[in-house]
Length: 273
Image (cartoon, rainbow, N blue to C red; front, side, top):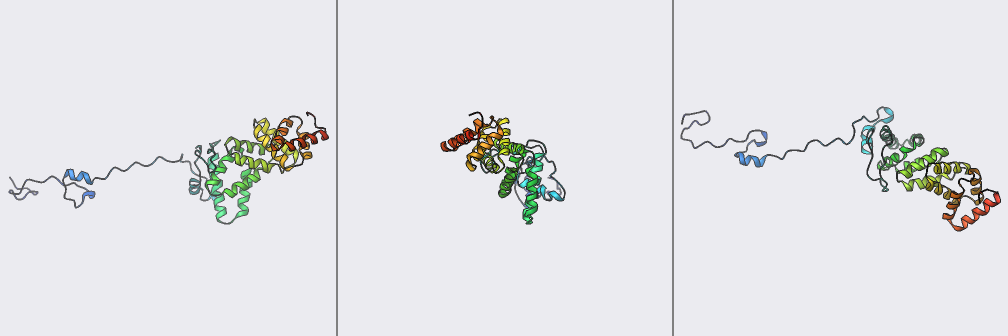
């Protein structure tokens, strides 16, 4: 057998199989079958992106929103928020393309202000957010709870309860439609602190939107905290349209509450009895 650089000695035994090459087999004296045992399993590919990739809000007002919004519930433009919230209500779906991004930016801003102890400015943000379109309210509830800002959600509900009757009724309807019955009930109970005529307007707006259950709950909350005479004033302000709902609401409170209301309505001369 002729000499070669690899086998200088012709009497040498038969050549061994080639060693595996590459850094991962450095220093190993194994054949091809053994080398296969050392080969690592292929790594999985990169995960699918969790959001649409639309940039988060920028600028001083939304400082840090890109990271915090992703951590605390931001899903990007045009994405639906699904799953279950802390209270078991279904996660709402963003009603318009800008809703998710706007909510994420507001939550990031609140987180920064709370961390810096700027409570007054945080309250101003909540007052501004309270005037947003009603369909964004369930999104705000979810994002604030996920961010650990449950107290801010309670404050926000109080600010929403002070909206004009149409906005107040729209907010209650949006919460009910999203399955947030507890939040809706709290909002309705807070709303009865307004004058009787405004409560009547809100109840009429709910009834006109097909939310008879919420209209009755609002009237029931009014009956619980106001006198029968004040309830009769509410009925006078609303005309006969609310009378059946008002009587049904009083009946749900108690038989005595219904009787007192009927008496007050007759004394006040409210028609329709």
